[in-house]
Amino acid sequence: MVASILASLEHGHILDGEQAALQDTNDHFLANIQRNGTYSVVPRIPGGGGDAGEADRARRGRPRLRALHEDHRWAAHRLLGARVEQLPAIWHRLVAAGFESGHAYGKALRTVKSCVGSTWCRYGVQDSVSLAIELELRYRGIRSPHKIKAGVSGCARECAEAQSKDIGVIATEHGWNLYVGGNGGFRPRHADLLLADVDTATLVSTIDRFIMFYVRTADRLQRTAAWVESLSRDGVDGLA
Image (cartoon, rainbow, N blue to C red):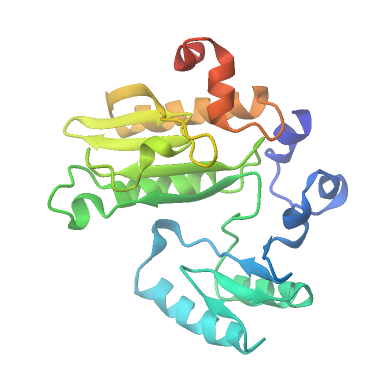
């Protein structure tokens, strides 16, 4: 627990010094190993897209990366088929093009999923895309006991599946609802409603406290779903 907290305080390289001993296999290579022994690399692209400048950087970065090996393939902003000896060059070129890691391999915040919200959707009642980008940029790189998945939906139709995430936000006519402790996988868990109809500032400050409490008190490799359940028999009431 102490190591997890300390690893979140500084912004040095994750493999520097004693921090290297804290990392799992994928963390050591800053990539995810695939079934054939190659690796996938996921750069961070908040909101899943960007402006014209970001699109231009993506176009410039992808052909250069493809030149490294003919089996490299991009899928949903993911580079597949990279050999371990190619990873340093891949990250060098991604960083040079203005990208950073999406932490798809780490015990940290993953990319924040969102629907298109009120920007495009006729049902959207709040700007879910902007909030998802804000949350991803705010919490990126935080080391935690396990991965943290988050989602922001722009209305009650829940296209971003926020209620199955560790941190889920759903827009309402009056603000935002905050859900915590959701999980998919082998033991799905519906997230618990923690706040209803709050403004953005209250929402973000509560998420701050939730993440800090989780990092400080959860066991290593314990997802928020199991952690929330362990706090009290009534689940989310243990956060009060």
